[in-house]
Image (cartoon, rainbow, N blue to C red; front, side, top):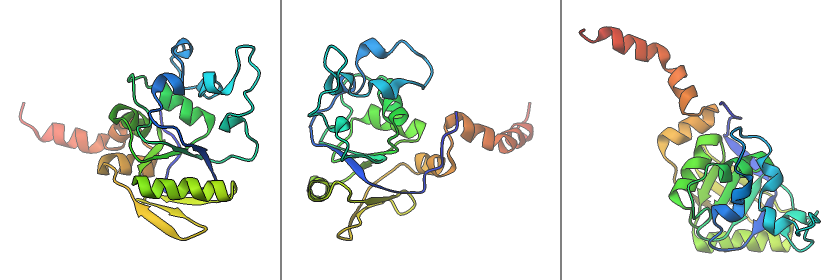
Length: 198
């Protein structure tokens, strides 16, 4: 399933300065029944967002009208726990296109890259600068350049680079998942196959 191309994202950000956010907190297990990547955003951080009577918890960041944007800024070790793809689906379906943290669980990172969410890993020091910028001004904007592999705090001009697998970077800039990539090189695959001896 193709998704939107990602080159440069300029957006405000939602701060979640909590360490060790695991996939069961991102999307509780009871919401894993669907097999399509739709509707999971409604239950992103469900137990942190809502009380048992389904009323919103006023103190949770996603329920604060002053925070918005396509960037989620999380604490260290974001996406730990189980390997469920649904956690990345929930992040994407809610509307986030980038998660910034100082450390990601490997499987969560891979799941994000497979569906068009960019996990940008920065240093702990730069992450704190991002949190400070949001705390100072909830409308602060950030630029995430996949082409340059760089996150910039636009208010100060400070920036830091992040690493990404070349193959995943190429897929994201083209809006490809793994199947789209193979379909895109179908001609080359057929050419190679016909050049091989039987």
